[in-house]
Length: 86
Image (cartoon, rainbow, N blue to C red):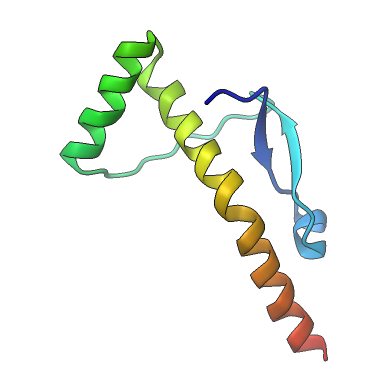
């Protein structure tokens, strides 16, 4: 899955529970994460088969996860914030 946008949440919009998108590569950060051998082998196999870098496949996997899970997380955070102000 390749999208022309990468997820980006800015502080003010995050507080309002708004999920916004920023153009890909506007700012890259380095992520150091330990993954198990099976995950690494799987990502490496996908990267090789698609002729992409391991970094690109990892970014796509993170994008896929964020698209599925971030809206739920923001909704939960909104409910928590609303209960604290009520």
